[in-house]
Length: 500
Image 1 (spheres, one colour):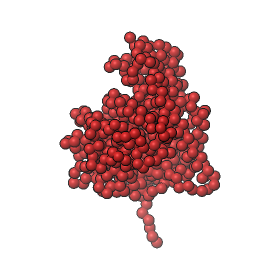
Image 2: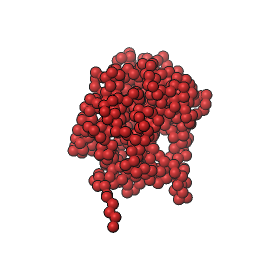
Image 3: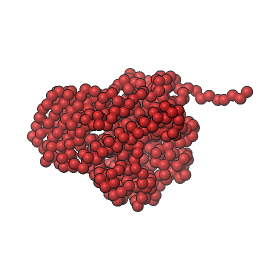
Image 4: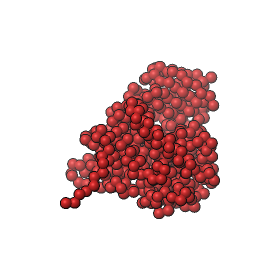
């Protein structure tokens, strides 16, 4: 009789209730009914940006409704379309969760991945839209990643404050992290991925690395693992699980040391992929900027030169920012973008802005957002479409010229307008709103209907002298204005705050 080896089960998977019940059934509300509930940007000096913001919501919602209808139709007919849903893309889409009030939970898009978790903790990077079945075998090098699920869930928690959701997803996330640590690391505990699994498919960072790790350490996978450890530690502390908090904190601290010892190219002042013999990749990839998302990863003395690459026109500061490869990389393609060899992908530009904010370089994030929203707005006005990617040095879609039918571009533009053009940041568990005011203040600008968890909304409109506030719940308001900072407790109601 032939005996088959069975990999040991991860005990935490038994606590993953999504495997038993499957993704929660949710019907997407009609956009006409949803729109009055969404945040309203007020940009009197830039009406075209307001317009592209609403076009982004409309496009994103129609894409999601189409996917939901296709999935339901396939289930009802017992047919399989073969359409799959991508883990990394879904994580970026759910960045909008806290901006959608009401019973519909956009972060629930991730439930299908938890439902498909193996007993070992493995989660496939692609599952079928209809049945949440995994499309890859675990030990295919391309089978999983990028590991952004915990990052997306924590973002949803900070915007909406749903602790019950954190408690529900934590066992699956912790089990998945342990699987990745056991099966996606090598020397010194550094992580590997592939071009395909990293979602930067044709970027030649690693020779012949599109579908294989080639025994390199990959900077995005390593930085994402650090970020994952930090988020899981925060979740564990929130849920009073100190042993698991210590487990991931210990790994994070060790990873930070090894990344800074082995993956920092001091000649270029840049983090890069590293070959088995210690040689650095010849390219500078936007993948390195995942390092900014964790406040402890980049040492203080390296932060300024690392970020300087985002300012230098011969590096990442092309006319339309940010290219996926630096302009001084040999494989950079300015003429067509050629996928991830220079094209501008909005969700990755937004990722860098998030990292700059963590690194307390908000003014640069703001400038990049102005550049990017203006570019996408102008091209949408001329073509009527959102594109998957854009040219770095000319106004136009990059190759392959593909309309965005997933929603990644709209899902980047929406928070980019709210967070980095207007400057709003919501931390609802702390009942705190931060407003970094960088736009000209001759005319009042701001936001209406910004959700406050499930406790209502807030309106904030300000010119150079006064901020008008209307809020359904008490909040702490922190305002950064002309290098001044003030903080005040605002009760529910309507108020005028003087800035004089």
